[in-house]
Figure 1 (cartoon, rainbow, N blue to C red):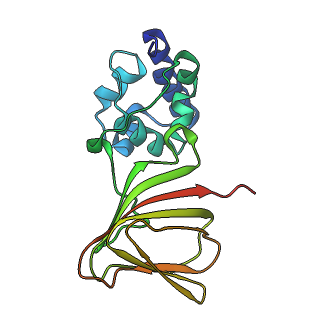
Figure 2: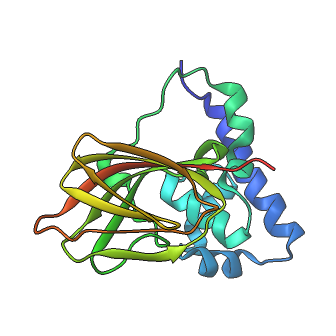
Figure 3: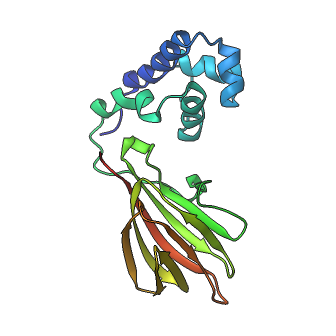
Length: 192
């Protein structure tokens, strides 16, 4: 059993209410969300159904979590699983650079889960500067080799190895090998 059609109108109504509360015109919000005013009007009036990327753009333009736009929908569905297609993935801009790709397979804004999952690819010579974060991190190396620096320790991870650590310590990683290193990366937001 999926989402009932009548419940989808709640998304459009929620967008309309937040837009009015923030005193944005239809055209202003459409421009900020990089969608046409016509499409936005159709979504607000339940004449069109927004795709997840469009809803995400609208939520960012409204400066609200995506979960806030679709919260009511969770009460109208009892799907036991969620599928995220490869074509729907995007790079996490924080951890990506010229030699590093951190392709999200689950974003913490999706269903408000407080975790991110990604496929991390570090090309030879790729590295991440030393930093502190507010999350716990787990990495499973699928192929290649990743060298982690955690405070004063250097840990080399090879295919099949897993590391878990608190991002509140100084950490960085790099690939000194001659082939790309690929890992599954899961980060959890710390609870205060």
